[in-house]
Length: 129
Image 1 (spheres, one colour):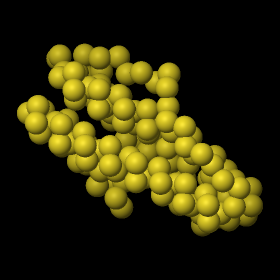
Image 2: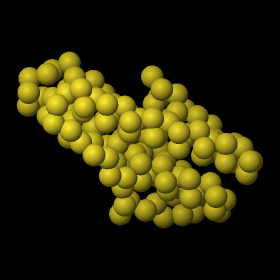
Image 3: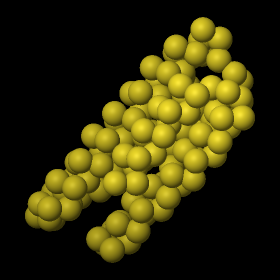
Image 4: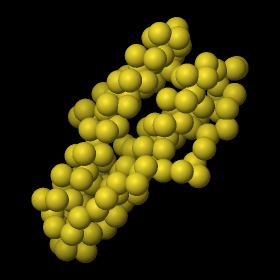
């Protein structure tokens, strides 16, 4: 199936952001673990799994729409060395993803791609949890 170019551009942008979210969350999860912060590590691991699941669904959708996903680039989120700043960086990454998802959903509705919009809505609901 041939997808709309505006929709696939948004999906590619989301893939780039989610790859960055996976990177920062994985790093922070391991730092929390190394510092003996088990609850934070477990929470970060859950967030990491949710990000990977969302990424997997986006990759499948892009392929279904007849485009090859670009995984060579990722959004580079800065990291921190102390826990409050690390949590702030993770929250900033989630806010960025949330904003991009909302913009992409609006585009899907404009382009009448309601299936992709529904998929993004599901991912957005998971991000907002």
